[in-house]
Length: 490
Image (spheres, rainbow, N blue to C red):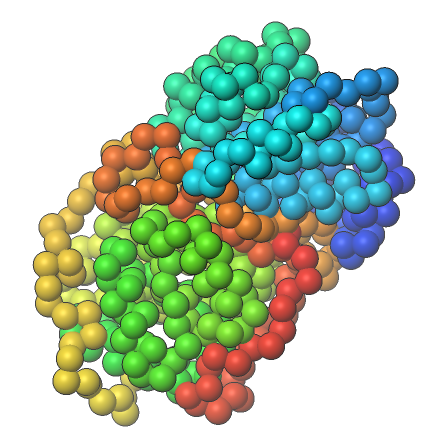
């Protein structure tokens, strides 16, 4: 019988082991067990890891260890030793929270850099000594142009969720930034898949890299119970309200295809007496952060989101996902339902499918290589005078080929989201989800994205807790969930 390794077995310093213990973890996830020794050894790494695998802690922990082992006698202002680049504001914040959590017993300094906010506070922060800089490519280039940051001292470069950065059109920015870095450095590249594009990028960045992989392409969470209700578009809102009330759901993430659809659905659910809110690319960062915080705390029971706005969303122990409308791109379905059933927890994904969406359903079933169980629509609900989704142009729009580079939306199998290091129950560490971050707000979910950073809401950390579907809560009271997760982990 093989004995499970611990973080102490990986050779991490005592201050890091204390921080890991503070977070309640003892056993590394597979990606952490593979990646940490290679990073500690100083070699380049190409790693494939998807959501929920704990990849953030897989590079943050050994990076902190290396910095602590080789402190500088003098640190220059605005001259980081480590540069971590991510595609979105939310992921940037999550990585920074992970650095703060695991570096709490060290003197390592770090900061985030992203667009969509005033640049002056970032300039002020760069006037102080800095060890780790977590940044989105566009805003980092802005600082480079203003000479407010000095990249000549970077010893370690991390490209996190590199496939999403490519899909969002950041390849030119990335190459410009890499050209400003010292030639002698350690390079770590993390991606959901080893696509041809990623391997091409790796050739120009990595040297004699070790490859590790714990990801499976286009697979849906085994613990997610997937079902389909065949219903008319005009009745979807009423059926959704009925299901939420009768099931006593206290926390449900609902996906729509468009921003306007998200707004309308949230407004109509509120009229039905449900605590609901919407997040999408047209919402301000403060509004999106507030809506997400309300959702996590239980103040809001139903969060309605578009695919772009939900990227990077990491909600601890989310029990329920609903596809109010199926996505045009089948891989996005995998990405959506991956929000639940994470890190060994049970989850459920319900899709409301109109006859016009059957072609999308068939495409999804081909991608996931299984037929989704169809169950009869619930009875006992009463249709409202105003159709829920309506038969307007938005719901009857022609199918689009929403592939990453055209729309800024990465296919689901390439989309990353903040991944926690692992299950709290098995003692695995987590990275951290957190606040806002980005260079530019997307104006439209379906328009081409160039140098767009930030599309989702911040993730929530901490290891998963047992799913609570509130099955015994009285119908009609889904909004009360007083519990607030302790740590944001990725």
